[in-house]
Image (cartoon, rainbow, N blue to C red; front, side, top):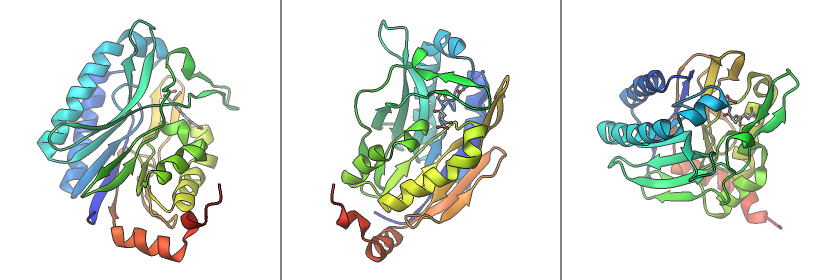
Length: 270
Ligand SMILES: O=C(O)CNC(=O)[C@H](CS)NC(=O)CCC(=O)C(=O)O
């Protein structure tokens, strides 16, 4: 593993596939011009809208998004995580909320179908019932071992509240935990940063967390603050509240140093 720059992209996706892909392309370009070699896009980057519209356009979204990720990775010669987009499940009428990691040749490195679905009545009055349109994945997320970029573990959004999923990733040797998200503004203001720092500290891993921000549609507000956190829990970059990118260096020497200073992974009892 080498030292390199990673980017967590922050965007305001809307219920318009082509608009979102255009916005994502601009931000990937911005990240690559700053030197990023690993680029993460947030959950729902290619479509964020009403559940029924997402289902109705499911096949088109799935195909266009996968092609887009391959094209961007090849054109910019970087590894890209598409942090969560719908892929229809055969015949059930539902989709998997899928994250896809693609290399600079456009080849798929890893795929993950979100296992924890956001079925929550948020105290701000909004009700989420992700399971009404999304089929829960049945497999734990993968860790892809890249000789250059390190061991990269996948997850999506609401997963961040389930530390056992990240312990599974660090048990597989993960160095970097991806948490692409569309966190609600209401939960995000109190929980987002704390949860991300916790996952970084308890697993002594880098956390790369691309995010949705602002008003996506109707009354849907997302929290923003795409960030990159180091294995000690220090926030290296924070994209704030506007669309943009958070960029930081991922360093194997820092991973080694923190794991020497705080060898908690070696003291696991369970
Ligand atoms: O609903 C939308 O339009 C966009 N959001 C999503 O697609 C997903 C599933 S509903 N959001 C989350 O998982 C938020 C989790 C979260 O905010 C928390 O854990 O507090």
